[in-house]
Image (cartoon, rainbow, N blue to C red; front, side, top):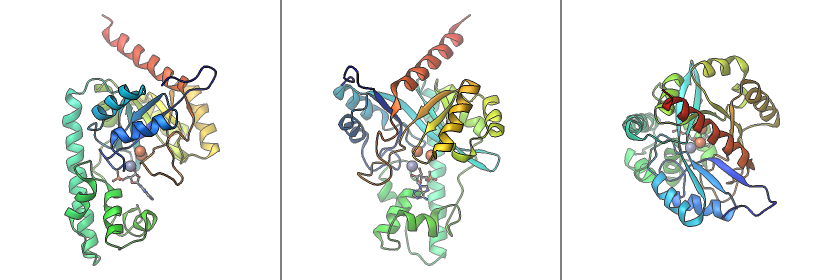
Length: 286
Ligand code: AMP
Ligand code: ZN
Ligand code: FE
Ligand code: FE
């Protein structure tokens, strides 16, 4: 469905499905996008593009443009940085790299379970894998398994007590450098966008990422304060970075994150399209 004439068109460029730690299948995410009147949506599951074909066919059926993306977790020094690779086009080499990252997620889930067992919680890896059901496994699946066992009441409890950075069963991810993450995005023909930089999105760190090839900034995100948005917008303007934004929706029907809530203008997606086209034409030039 195209936007009604005169009505602003909105997009959402950060979402998760059951291919990783979201709760709705990819087609369910697109159906929700239709219900809230979005014209385009980027599926950006953690370390996987398995949801993209189903999202694409639902998008064709419902007249919603689907942008292929993936969210990578990387490190800039000791800072964990999430990177959105948006507008993936060359998928050949990408899948192999993503499958390695998913294998390390699996090993990490095992380590988290081992730590929980040491703490006297008799959770098994199978219970966690039942929650991820073949998708890229992450801490939210461990949280759901803990809730299912009645060990904690909710996500907040699971992350505060056990799974968050200060939790007693925290296990860091494998170290992927931000430079390598940006290279993965570029090799797949995608734009490299710094996801939810938040308060960490300051000039000094940003300059290092731009030197490594960063293309854009996620300005609008539910975790950002209005100060963050202002600062990130100014930085994007100053460094000529493409803007991005999204709800980081994981499928919850209510609560603080809702699909489309960030009112990301279609114009921002058009800026990204122009950037993708200019990179492609500079690469094909003799
Ligand atoms: P992982 O990729 O396994 O490190 O898990 C990261 C995901 O866990 C994020 O994308 C969120 O969906 C979720 N998450 C991280 N921190 C929290 C928290 N404090 N409360 C609830 N969910 C969280
Ligand atoms: Zn997530
Ligand atoms: Fe993230
Ligand atoms: Fe995300």
